[in-house]
Every structure is written in structure tokens, then in C-alpha cells.
Length: 91
Image 1 (tube, rainbow, N blue to C red):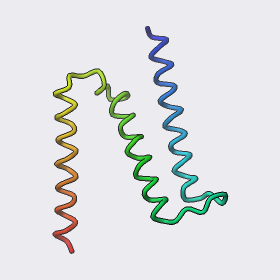
Image 2: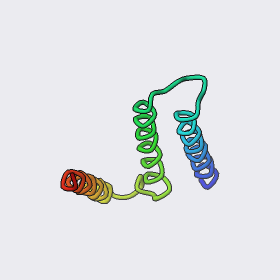
Image 3: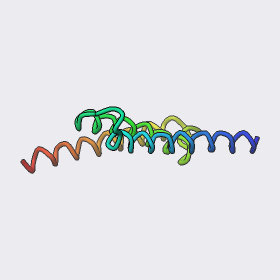
Image 4: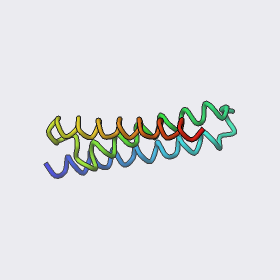
């Protein structure tokens, strides 16, 4: 059982490392010329995947009751709503 969890955490770590490398390549790659908007969009997508992996596995939400997961999702949604409201109130 413990051996399986080491494999799982190692695979997640490798996926996070690959995502970080992809982030770097979006802005620094000379092979493919990404526009700034494409690089930012790709970075946001990669950041979302990395966040989901970290929250699900390293913070153990994957094995918690669904109600706790929904509560965390609600907190995230409300935080995004407050950030959007603050952005529009400044301008």
C-alpha cells in the first residue's frame, strides 16, 4: 500500500515538474513563437492543472468527503468573485 502512494506522489511530482518546464517554454522557447496572449493563456491553464493536482493529492482533498471539496470550491468561487468586483471598482 505504501509503495503505491510513493509511486503516485512521484508521478504527480514529475507532472508538476513537467508543467513548470512547459511554463518556462511558453515564454522562452525559440522553437515556437507564442504570442503574449497565447503564453499567458497557456500559463493560466497550466497553473489551474497544477493547483488541482496539489489540492487533490498533496492536500488530500481527493480522499475527503465531497461536502468539504464543494465547500473549498465555493470558497474559491467567492474569492474569484471578490477579485473581479475589486478589479472593476478600481477602474
